[in-house]
Image 1 (cartoon, helix red, strand yellow):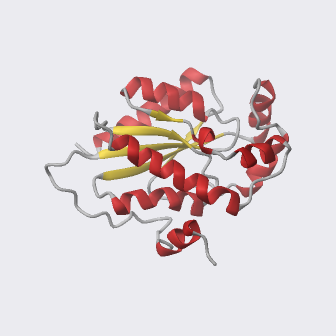
Image 2: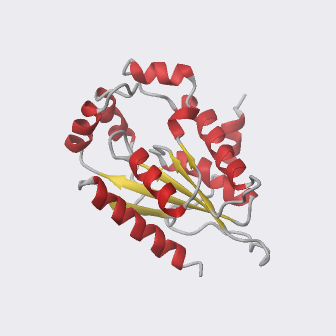
Length: 211
């Protein structure tokens, strides 16, 4: 029997890589809200960028790693790549956490989320949020760097379950979102301050489109 996650994904399998989702027009009295997904493989700087963006925009921040099950974390700690089946529930929980954050009493204008979202179909799971909530817009900020830079950064991390051996596995699975209309690619092979600046400019440019 197909899992809830796979049924949900299949229901929205027509999502296009190149063309925008046919969003419903939101009530003009309802403010637009944005889910900013900071994506990329281990070592690209997702957490650093997400925290910086959350501070800059005064938005809530959700760390995607916190939503992995213990079995997923154990697998990654032992250099065992996650399968699609391992990821479905994680992606759905992360999506629902983002929507719940937007629905809180403070009703923020957006939320910042870290999620590797390595494959197109993983990003599609997150995109479902926009179908069910017409006032929500999804944006993927993809942090790009070559393998050697990612390996160096992961080796320097302390106390994280993701080991450097997993970087190659993630890059093998990676489907870069260059042709996806709701994704913005940012070169992260620079200083943290410069990467943060590039992301901030990209986000502000996107927000300007909604004015």
